[in-house]
Length: 443
Ligand code: 5AD
Ligand code: SF4
Image 1 (cartoon, rainbow, N blue to C red):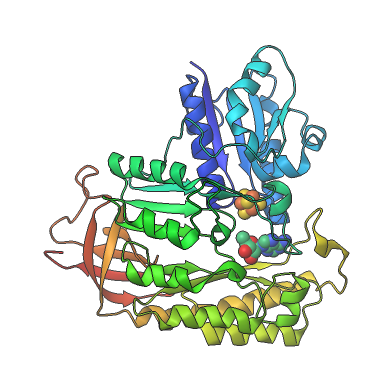
Image 2: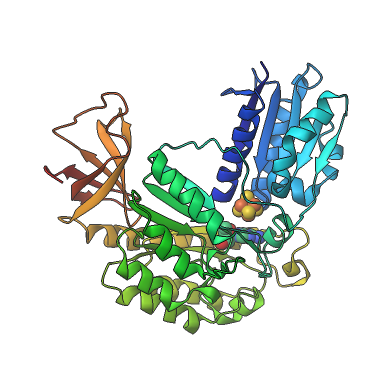
């Protein structure tokens, strides 16, 4: 029997794509192995959002280069594959398969070509009528499932490769999304995460014509589902009706990831983000006014081309104004094909590093404060794992906070039975990145 190994880099879209690839290969009679050593087929599902992410895959490929030719086949999938295309064969000549995300349904066919003696096979078209349904998906988590609702991106943020690596926006029909969500609920999944580069611009292509908020309401009404999450939202397309839907329906998790990138309207304009700081803050007001306590998280880029000290200070003042529950922060990285390549006034790497540290230190104290406010509260927590070293269960709240807890009824794992259940946990302590608590009985 043939074996494959797959390593995934990048976002949840990529994680889910790898599940589709694994499902397809398993259906072809392959079995999955945990290390590249024992695999006939070694796949890297890659990310090219920042230079560092892209370099990682090339260093991985170098690491196992010596094994090529011993019957091992190397494939590069995902965003670096789409971006670099056949150039990958020059950089890493032992690679024989290069395929972007719109070609995964063709993988079996490409593998047959390789087996028939083809030395190099590519799948790089960004065909817009590619379907979302791969007949086979092997989901990594038995309780939480990802569903792609929209592919690609029609925005043109000046720093971003995604429009080039994932192509134009294509929404999936509501019928097909609902069918997959219902099937998952019947199979016992209780949490669904709707995925897209920009989920808010979802527009049902079928005659039903649902917008994103309608889709949220309908998915949340499926019997058996306890939690529905979605990511990522673009502030420009984030409408009040989404907040209303969350308020109405506790199945819709009270967490919104709303990447702002910068607190300076001048920088936002240079980034071609299509909103001002004030427009962004209006959306934050909607979220803050909601009665359910919606947690808000974001992405920040520091040191974008032309970002002055004054601009940077505006990002810091935005962090104070919003008080995010968590954030991801990045140093600006120049990417191929992107509009920002032609901008000047680049910020030095050293200064980017300084700004990143300042953002992270500020956010750390905000998170300690935000998390401390939850001490004494009871949180519905989904049990995700057990940490043997600390003797604590690892859980997650609707607000997407990690809550590690002890449980006198289930002090330690007995098989996998407790995983995926929902329990009430009283928060007793708070750190910057997680909470600690004790399970309360009867909930
Ligand atoms: N440099 C740095 N960060 C970037 N991101 C996207 N492109 C770049 C880039 N060229 C960040 C943004 C985005 C997140 C997924 O990655 O903050 O929201
Ligand atoms: Fe990385 Fe963007 Fe591709 Fe996701 S879509 S893997 S973040 S480049």
